[in-house]
Image (cartoon, rainbow, N blue to C red; front, side, top):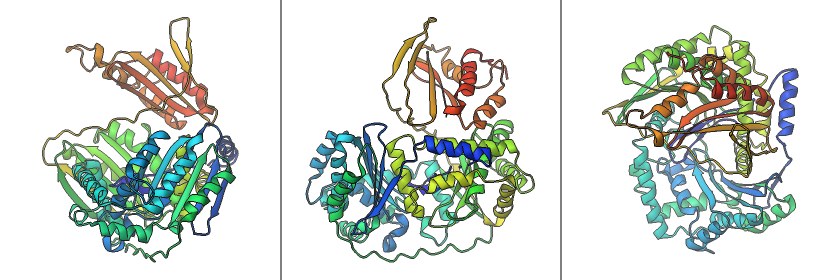
Length: 580
């Protein structure tokens, strides 16, 4: 996938994805074929509605998406009011001219109640995932919400309170505050500087009439994209979309001209203080927009910097020098503005100066030295793995098609992106490092604590359940197997009884310590060798402890399974528990 500044209310960047030269190119082509690069049906209805349909009969499920080409940068006289996000709350499941809110909820419950919406800088999306027999109901609901919203006063008042509470919570979230601080420091003119959720004082002033005006202005069929992926027939899907969304009337759209951000002529620094226990910071450099050819070496460079435990910044800044608790890098290249190469870190407040100097030293080193062939190959393999894992479900495929279409008007842009990534050379990476790692285009944003308030970690998402084959080996080991030929990936998990439940006051924390130590080395590999082994194959491995168990997980591409499983079992059976 390519790069977005994607936001659920606030600001949350999302990025990346890949291709090999010579023999490697054949490998990636084979991988794309095995992924089932199904033909995507693309048409435009008479009212201007864009439609994408992809048949995928691997499972009896369907994902229906509606993308509206409007986000926080398109709010015109309402810039900074969070109108796009506010309206998303109203329209999703709300009262229409044909159904009450309660009726929509009953229909949603009847088809599985797997529906949500999100708002970003440049688009708003609504989706319903359901089983094959209910896809028409999903399309009916989405069309009704998009074309017939009533924006009742009762729902307006209720959701205004919800949005304000969400906004207030974000004001204390260090990650959101840091991202917004960096954005408004980077962009002085372009409306990307405004938070998607809006400013509190402006959100409070929004009236129902403002939302009605915005709805009539932006929610027109010729500003929408409908994507349907799953166990459907293209002809019947198109006919139903025509009978529902096709009834909407085309309306004139405002000619919104986004201002070009002027050149940055000097380093910019911004600091905010929050009630948090540790500091966080972001070093970013102005780069390019999505369609620039430097997109590809910049994206590979970001992975070389900080994707995986064996990457440069993780190994040197986090592990060896221990200047930060965590570090990441990403190349954000949106379609609507100049991009940013950003390095973000969580650290102690008194380490900000030292960590900044160490990070810059690593970045500037790339202006002089070529990355190694091993680093380059590893980053490309990681990106290929990302491409595969990000398209495992019909929902993921529907979203990917929609985002490609919105940003480039090519629903298969990601496939081209995959190929171009694999053509990147070490010389091209050095060239973009020289061009873009310049102090005069740098933004240094820092969030510092004003009191020692602990930060609460987010809970992991629940994993999907699938039918399995259960086998018990002669040694008593229980094995659960499930074959899914839809994608060339393998996931594995090993669970052990333990966890907090079996700990005593004297041994509290022992299960978590044990889990963490499993990845510190085996009798055959030390911790660095393990990290390099998994990173080089675009694979992942992790260990964790819970209430009644601790577990080790791994995921890899199908072709690497034999090698990965060999080392995975070595971790489980022969951990070294090093003294250091």
